[in-house]
Image (cartoon, rainbow, N blue to C red; front, top):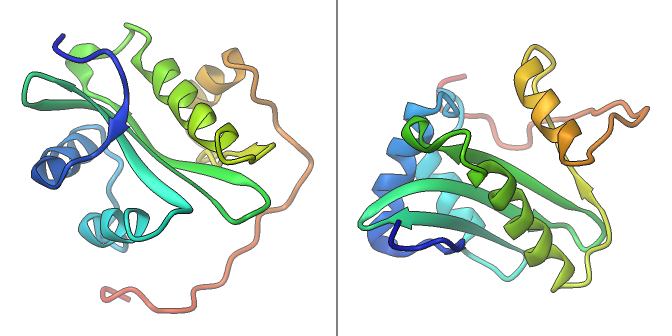
Length: 144
């Protein structure tokens, strides 16, 4: 691999990131990945970190904070590179990004039906907390 570290995504890599997310089944019709990426890159409280192999984006993690807690999205590793520690490296990069900014806790959302991913995060030391996650859409998605 040409690069073994996560770094902020470059403009020329955005299409590759979206292709990675689609390959990994992370995109949803109600979330525009271009918009998500642009928003994450628009300010100092969030970023999109990637790992590349040559010109190919092989792993990603979107990380940010609200001034109180950190959160990650779009943790992805290309199927050809899975089970090589890149997912754990992505989480390590996100944790490092947050701690460098003084953020002391990382919250993580996992779809309830995704047992394999839940197990992955538990092996990294994450645990289920007795919280109820509630949400309200402030701007309706175009497909709704």
